[in-house]
Length: 295
Image (cartoon, rainbow, N blue to C red; front, top):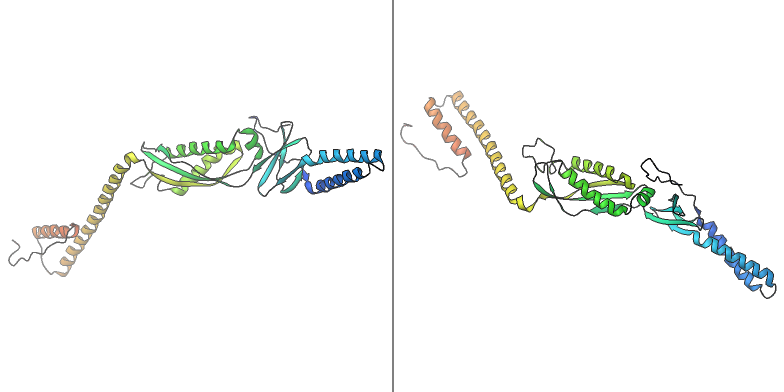
């Protein structure tokens, strides 16, 4: 009988499987009995034939029930199509011969998605590729609730990446928003949560995930690069002007305090202008020696 929820989701449970080593000993005993019975056919045909038949039946009963499980591998047991449990014990195992066995890997799988073109929160086309480490945690759901759980994982990764990519802007030049480029840890954690919700129906968990490629699409990459360069120039100029204003204020304050020269408003304005040109200019200034009056 299949254990399920109201949504007909299969739930994993432990199978009634046993160690195969004891049954292997019995198999060898049956094989030896068959050989011994064959040797008795001339001396005691009836007893020899009975022993051969009994040994053959034992061989037919025991041999089909063997299977081997490696580390991080499981076997789903079915009884005439109905789920009967999952065996996760490693080594040589044995079940009744009329029970079906389907192996499934529990090892971690690493998937790197293709580069997807997604529109971010502001509508800019960007390219995203992600790396996801996932593994099967519920064998019953993976095998019986999903037709092809590996293909299902690939599709859900693409859907989750598109959802997260459209939820945030690629970049925020004012550094006031959560962005795809500037908040990798937060976006990666949210992507993992999104994948966990989508893959829960398949009995799959996500160990880690993150972006392997994140960039503007080619059609706007050039324009965005020029925008970044322009904003970098503006930011640099702003820092330069703020520093120059501070230096001019320090120079005027030092001159006034030391009383080296008395400056009226006009001379002070000329000095400020000259200092700002010297401090903010991109080229080295050439000094001009004034041998006469400032006027």
